Image 1 (cartoon, rainbow, N blue to C red):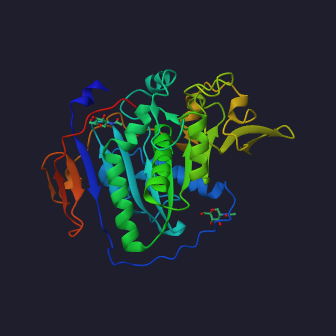
Image 2: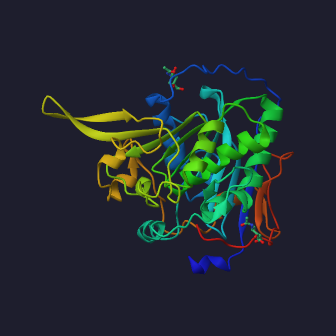
Image 3: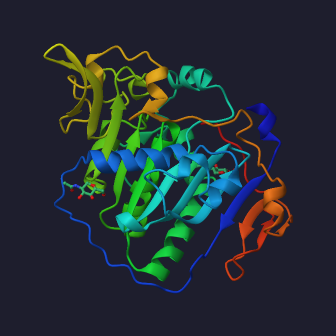
Length: 352
Ligand SMILES: *[C@@H]1O[C@H](CO)[C@@H](O)[C@H](O)[C@H]1NC(C)=O
Ligand SMILES: *[C@@H]1O[C@H](CO)[C@@H](O)[C@H](O)[C@H]1NC(C)=O
């Protein structure tokens, strides 16, 4: 981790592809059931793609994780904050009539170390504007105080100017789920976006009970998928005897777990209660597995190389006529075949 602190490098790729101002009708059933497995299997692939290290194949949506249920996705912006080792993208899933915002989870540091640290995360920041709501400063800042928030908001705004008020779906796995949650709340509370859908996979707790109830008021269309014995949804710990001082999940959990039907193993999905801490869902097991954390719906959710905090600018980028001018890698919106890097060096690193 420390080796990246000095590496004040931040990449931001913006793109206006097909900037014809095409209108897309919103046809999203708002009375649709909260949990939709078909949608979950699509979104987990976006969450997985957010881990792709080769930015060119990700940007052009030609990566090996980009060609199954997410085919045809149109990337608008790829935000990479190398200093804090964060990555997210914004684009359009035309088949869902939706803007997809996906956040990468932990990369560049060992997942074991990151999980071990989760035990000790404090509720050390009052969430602005919400009474008694406390969150973890590191998770909050990783979205609000890095290049992510600005990059994502401006991409959403540009996309909506071009394509109309598309529906917005925010997703992410692990730490990426925590960031996705702050993003969904930010869009709703601070930017007047209605009916944001949030679906996260194996995310940790991010705030206390007051925060959870504030959250569910503003982001009612939220699903936190948990898987079998995945350890991360159990962290930071929940203490039922200190409900006010403890971390508390927001609803609604959907717990994936193996069940036996007539002696035959099958995959079960339990739609949990609206408390956020349904004792009959993932809390009914000990939850000590890292393996269960790294796979949801049989989709791999981890970085595809070890060097996931560096920027791979290889020969394939050169065809895009890349220019370096400091720290931001961006694609000139008026010239779709031109990428440029510009400077931003005022960021400070944070611990997430
Ligand atoms: C579930 O999601 C898929 C993909 O978005 C959609 O085609 C389908 O109609 C949805 N099902 C329900 C019951 O809403
Ligand atoms: C955000 O970052 C700036 C500069 O790094 C820092 O001074 C400020 O305290 C941070 N704010 C929060 C809420 O973390």
